[in-house]
Amino acid sequence: MTDAVVDDIMAVLPPLLQSLEALSYVARYLNPPDFDRIMSDVGTPDQALQAACAQLTAWPEEFSDARVAPLPFWRWQPAFTPISASASC
Image (cartoon, rainbow, N blue to C red; front, side):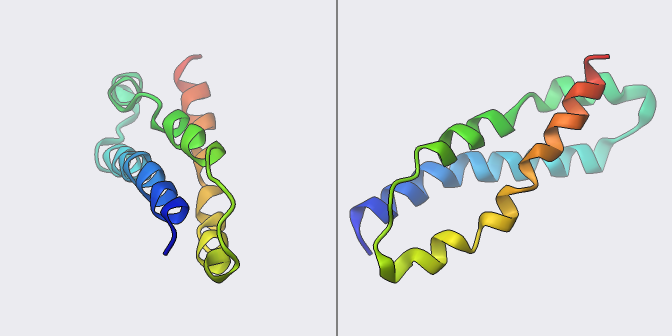
């Protein structure tokens, strides 16, 4: 495994785990009367994840499958957008 692959994994892993924890928090405590407070508690972990994903470098061909595999997962990150937009109304 090259340094670029390890560096990318180390850069993406913390914001990815924080985003998953935020989704878990929302799922655990979602109560319509408390919606604004819950969204305030969660913040915007998707912004850190988007920034980390934007910084990913080109990986060697032997690891290209591993880099492509998470792409369907990255597509959930816009899930924060409708929630955040609703919270600001």
